[in-house]
Image (tube, rainbow, N blue to C red):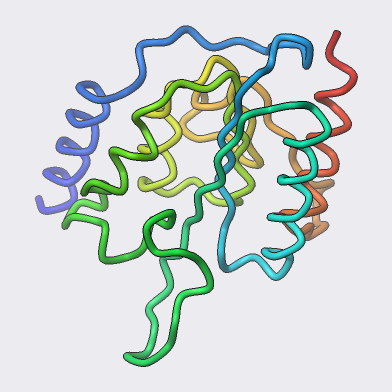
Length: 177
């Protein structure tokens, strides 16, 4: 019963808050702004930040980077990122919907492309992906069949880092004419 209520509330909040923009694969020449989600738990986390920043500069993109860090931390253990730019466990309500001013900041602007380097398909990522106003959405793993326009997955059985996934995404983006 509890899980049914949770699913119902998730579905209802997505219906109300998801972006109304029509999404599609866009060529690099049409991209001027970007938002990227990075998993703070990924071993290549710092390298991901550098590669994304370089990509933004090289392509004259106005970009933002936001993080997902849903670990259970010990009391004195610090976060790896600026908490204002990170979805943390404390930002989730009881049915895992992100909340608060921080989330509003992430979703306030519109972007030409959303790049998700988070390699899971949980509800917090689905909520942020579906609610972000982006014309083109790229991810590592499809969420409920329709969240991303382009999904770049690892070869079967191979584990890749976020930085390696980004390099593959970058290659595809430059090929789209």
